[in-house]
Length: 100
Image 1 (cartoon, rainbow, N blue to C red):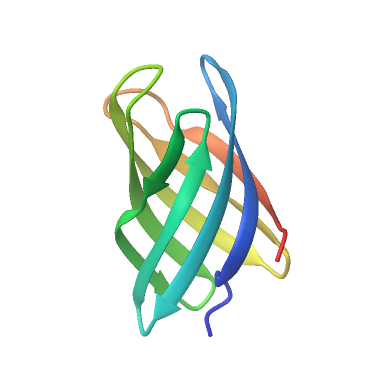
Image 2: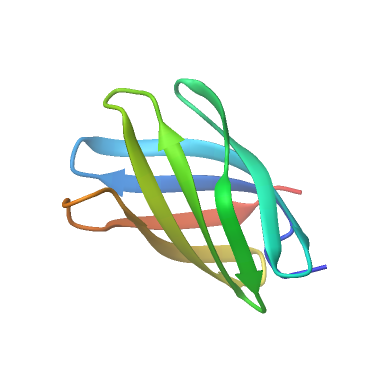
């Protein structure tokens, strides 16, 4: 079991305001799978990898604007921090708390 395994409440601080996601993440070896439930419903994570206390994956958002977010996270116990990069836009900060 990797440090990222479990359920998380994530807040992404974007230029358009804060976005909340409830994510469930699971690792098998270095492969990371899961689902993030946001304002437009559930989104399967894509291309997920995890190693130790770091993880990376992509979320393909459908709204308010269709875009892909490349998410990079660092887990510290029951908290995480990281960034979400959407195309040419500046990276957005992410903070999270383990919920299960």
